[in-house]
Length: 364
Ligand code: FE2
Image (cartoon, rainbow, N blue to C red; front, side):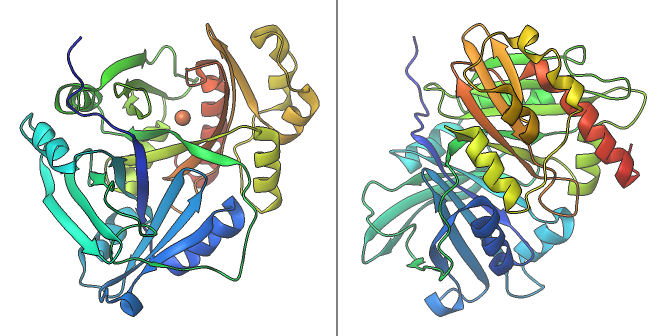
């Protein structure tokens, strides 16, 4: 087997550009149980923006707002609303990662750069992916600071207990009609990923709308990127709704892993996070469909958690409603019990749930 030319240690961080980072930071602390760990802004010598770094187990979220209107971040927010800008990848060699990918055709977003402070140095370099989203390679083996040089530790007086969110399981991109294969090719050829799964419009269709999806994964399987595109249907696909409101391709959802989905979801619900609802009839024949599971059915039904099985085991999952007013980014909470798949058996019920929401928004 060929050597992996782009070894990845995992997701380093996910950065969202948002209209009001200070308030978004409190939302993710309060509702999702993240802890504020670091900050960069005017008080730390950064004059044009403010960034809050939140952490829970292995997940780091960065929320960034510009401080004025004539700023690329302000333009990004005007076009896209709140959304994911950076899917950062943790590597041992950022310059090599950038060279390997740009030499295979990736467009550079920023050339390799060393940033330093008294805690050491970090090397970063970025490439462009779908829409205005970028991948930043982060090499932090010579760094002991709280996040990146330029950030200072920051704590909140609000100290939430974590709710069991462990790591990012996968991040899904929505791209335009006809563009899925181009981006699958990009991840295969430019980043050395492998095609893991394909779903066509027969797998993912309801009475009204359809989509197609392919999942790519890196060599060690730590990074998984499903890519969706709309497919023809009687009415507007949820992917088309996303593309319209996001103003182009972008990250549709981040799936976060938990070891105890009932605990995690009841905490999220009690803190006001809204989820898609499937009809209670979903549970009538659930055990016939998925066989024996460790969990009691009743709490799953009360929390509206979905279950699916593949050859290797089963998984439990649930999807939030969009976390901003534009019907764009949402979260998935997933607990894997052996299954390595993505809940194909739930697609129909889920997409019907999404369509009920689209209908309420007048976008179906
Ligand atoms: Fe997902």
